[in-house]
Image 1 (cartoon, rainbow, N blue to C red):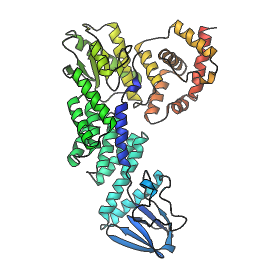
Image 2 (image 1 turned 60 degrees about the vertical axis):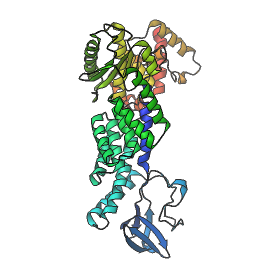
Image 3 (image 1 turned 135 degrees about the vertical axis):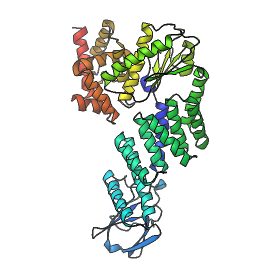
Image 4 (image 1 turned 135 degrees about the horizontal axis):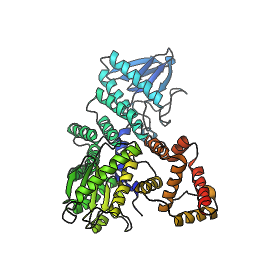
Length: 473
């Protein structure tokens, strides 16, 4: 068995998920809708007899309750902790149309209306401009965070950039912009955004943690370790601890390796044990395959792919992989080559297999399921399903009690067979379209049904029937 591709960037993803949570702090900007069609944006409000007292910055507006149609609560991702009334409200209900604090989060349309209202107020009310700008930036941050979570990266980039246009030092927008850059393989922009942000916010643990992720992906491991350690000092958590421990272990093994840069790769290997020409041979091979896969996947990785070659024992010490793993991709290609002196056929197969994982991960933004990863990687490596394996799979389908459940779980060999069937029936470009849909946040089964018009369950069952026809009839 060769690599679990989806072992990839789980720690980095977990770290980013923790950091994204910090973008969700609510920002108050309640909208008071009047019966005459007008609206008033309120920092806080309270009921005083027959009047509603609205505060904006240092000013106060008093409106008869009889003129209030409804009060739209501030767009926020989560309700006030504990279900308590928000600050500035009296905890009582003004009328049946007043939303409660525990109501579901607002729609994007409601947030956009609040954004438009605040933009008008910024242009028209100089006295309240600073406070309205603060609330506007907070709402743009919320829109950017929603887009980031739904994998709408273009919208996320636009929202966070807009927020920074109003407040260039807003930490939430700086973090969100860097996260969106990182998710779209624009590591250079992510790094520069975070380095600037830390000048403004040197004690922000989430900025330090994300910058560590960027450095790690660029194989700047000493800088990554320093950033993660600083983040851990500021806000300890298990994800950071695991990443620090993993990197310390890796650096104890490959810290002295020779490192060289090529057009599309950063190569690290033990120059004392490998043959003198091995590094150049591997780079030449990888560059030639990169061009072929770039065309086949219609995907161009923007960042250099890190490739680390280990002596046999050190590979398993660094990765803690199972003994039968011949290589793995966890955001970086890691391959044991022993004391190899010249690039041989076996090493070429392993390198191509792991390079395929890098392209699959890049095309799907890290969302492709493991079975699709492994099936495609084996296919690209040049493997084919043997007759013996085909017969075994056909018999397994024929004797299965539930044909509908066939293929719910995959073996390493069956992933290749299923991908071969999908390519023969649908074509390789359709599978690339499926990966691209996954990159946009479409779930696997939905992506297949959208692009093939068949549910994945039907495709698995049709594959089983095709196996029976091919090998048993």
